[in-house]
Image 1 (cartoon, rainbow, N blue to C red):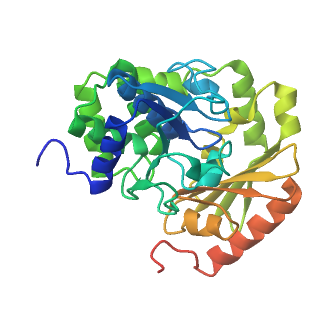
Image 2 (tube, rainbow, N blue to C red):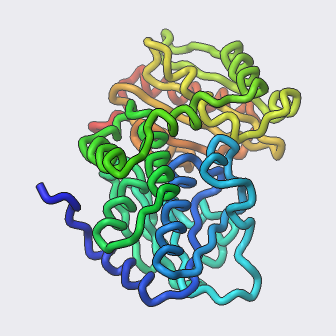
Length: 335
């Protein structure tokens, strides 16, 4: 097998767009996760090494757990006013709405879209979308190697964060041969898997451990224990002195229950909306379920933002999930 896999025509077109550009803005979805942070940082580093002026923009700050890669302020909150931009590249965003800060101006720039969500809406001039990729970081690893971009130590570690977190520490259904192949390549390049995992998962401040303690106390089961869920709201976080970004791992609590086929973490925002994280085991399709409420994601992991309060969202989501699960519907093998 050749060391670098054959990439699609869209990858070549994006490389050409980069080659012809001087100033490049890299962005990703709001409320960044590990793949968003890691792939965006790695791409910025590769672009700068190639002599480009590369900026990172996101209207939400980099979560604390990823600040060992880059400090707060690495991502600008908005596009620099009046600054000429030759190219904008979005990574790990399924649609323009997920970019938020430029939702109404997506077509104002030369625009490339690199993503692995099957629900991607192909919103850019060039769209490289690979639903079989375990994460965007994996796509970028081979892109850099195929076209001769330098991968420095920061880019290497950022790519590994993408891979580690989006596969759930190599435990989600997207943990494919491709995922392990990329991990092997990054290890050969010198990444320290133990050190990176320790920074992401085992370097928690006490306030975050207290948040997890509270989350465990809110663990509930319904539908003959086939559904597990945890719920919190913004007042809980305020009392503990933590932020919404500290809740990213909480969905793993209900997901860890042996009986749970579907797991939910529901968070009530201060604006009256509710964010729902969905995880599934077995054949229940999280993405199909999320799409019923206007959300999206992957078969094993998805998300929803509901325009209703936490209590109402709990009722609606849990009733629908129990009904579908009991009827054997919303399965991954359905067409």
